[in-house]
Amino acid sequence: MTGGASARTSFARRVSTMLYSRPRTRLGLLLSAPLAWLVLIYVASLAALLVTALWTVDDYTGAIKMEWTFDNIVHVVTGSLYQTVTLRTVGVALLVTVVDLIIALPIAFFMAKVASSRIQRLMVIAVLMPLWASYLVKAYAWRSVLSHDGILAWLLRPLGLDTPGYSLTGVVLTMGYIWLPYVILPLYAGLERVPNSLLEAASDLGAKSFTTFRTVVLPMLTPAIIAGSIFSFSLTLGDYITVNIVGGASQMLGNLVYTNVGTANNLPMAAAIALIPIVIMFGYIAAVRKTGALENL
Amino acid sequence: MVAGDSAIKLSKLTKRFGDFVAVDNLDLEIAEGEFFSMLGPSGSGKTTVLRMIAGFELPSSGTVQLGADDVTDKAPFDRDVNTVFQDYALFPHMTVLENVAYGLRVRGVGKKEREQQALAALETVQLAHLGSRKPNELSGGQRQRVALARAIVVKPKVLLLDEPLGALDLKLREQMQIELKALQRELGITFIFVTHDQEEALTLSDRVAVFNNGRIEQLGTPEELYDRPVSEFVARFVGTSNVFSADEAKAILGIDSKASVRPEKLRITAATGSAPSDLRIPRAIECTVEESVYLGVAVRIHTKTKAGQRISVLEHDSQQRWQRGESVKVWFEEQDLVRID
Image 1 (cartoon, rainbow over the protein chains, first blue to last red):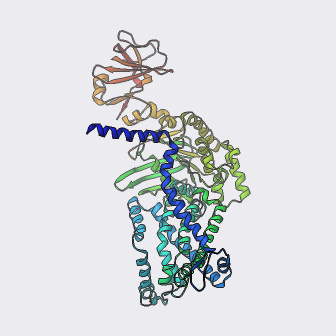
Image 2: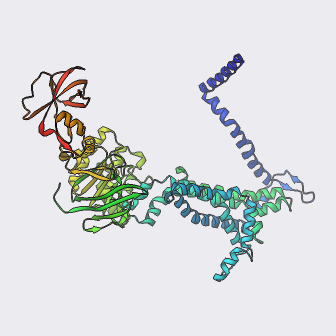
């Protein structure tokens, strides 16, 4: 019926007109769903985590007692086990970040500044492709690579070397591999924003390749490097699966959280441990903020 | 042409991108202290030649000589030439002073010394007071000057300018043209200026090379290019011309080659009028007025011959407004008719 159709049209039109003349309503409708998600689910669960860390567990029944205490946090901060594991976790996360940056920089540079646009597209796909595969599959693949009769041993033994086996080194290699795309992509995007003419200008003014890199590329790339390092650093800080699969007997913070949730059934303790990586990331971002690099993001 | 040794010598220079020949077997010598322009439409190869002189592109064949040295295979940082880029290419994370001092910094000049020299260079472009600003806090014209200062502070033998005034508005462009010319005179170094603006090339240059399809169509002083274009392309690209095809030239003018005549060399009278008295060997073409456009400083009259050939006349002291459809005679001096290929 034409009459009904035109009535509907005019209703849609009226809504559109109403929204057009009321920018605040428009903005409210646009943002209400994501904001609700962010506040209710995301921030609230973080707050719940903090609150849980201040509770305790009944030693006999294992039930959570909602009594306010700083015991868990004091325990986590002063306990030598937690200190050792925290240092180890931060060390692994730093190493993974450094390894990823060293591998990602030349790849990203090639993609952004050297490759033809066809090769560039192919490489973006190649970098993204590992993200389509399951995390577990990739970790187990590395378990086979690192094993004593694996491909790494087979490749290295003729050179008088051996596979690092299931160890922290294995963890660094595996995580470096798994998080690499998250580091390459921001660096690639950052390098794309450096016009070629700037590199030519530096060279024109007498700077050799390394000097150009140090004085022009690197300073302009700092925000991208920080963005990439936040990914590899924070993702490593919270991981426990890779450590279980290729880490041998080594433990990281994630493993402690996992055991406290599962085996030990001590959720408040797990929450207290989980606060450590959060505090470290806040510290890192605060330090980065001080350098002013975030203003260029 | 300024007398002196050659600053740049290009021999049999060719650049191919895949199947496309951007620069085709080019020979060119540019003298020391010369203001030399490479003029042509986009894609004519002028910028590629500039980039090969700077070292950003390596030639497919041929050589680039800088003074007595063959620099064909040398990297940009080993060549004593500097470039002012079309987009200025200022380093966004450095202040204006740091930008200008950059060339000195990578040469290992001490901080105090290089800042002094950079400040002096900024003074020559009247920007010494803006040294602590970042490039994004400057206007287009100011960025242009910073790019100039940054290139001249290292005292190159040759300064390459790649359409440096292209992004500026007309007033600013005219002002910068005057300043560029003055700067070149003051520094006494060779300027090689790439532009697609024929007026700019004529205003600034000692000599101009007109590029078309990777070749130099004509090389000469601005006067030679304007008064004696050798081809239809040059006649049309440099200034405006009335170009007669070979057939038209034969029918209308009775000559055996293509010919061109500048609109301002033409005079116009009524169909019954006699030749202007100052023409020594007057020739006349009978035309009809199609349109008369008032330009302020002059009047442009568009006319048409019986055969349909359009002829445009530029009259500076016009006594009379010509009406559409009016029969007129268009007069010119025999010697102002240029025979072209």
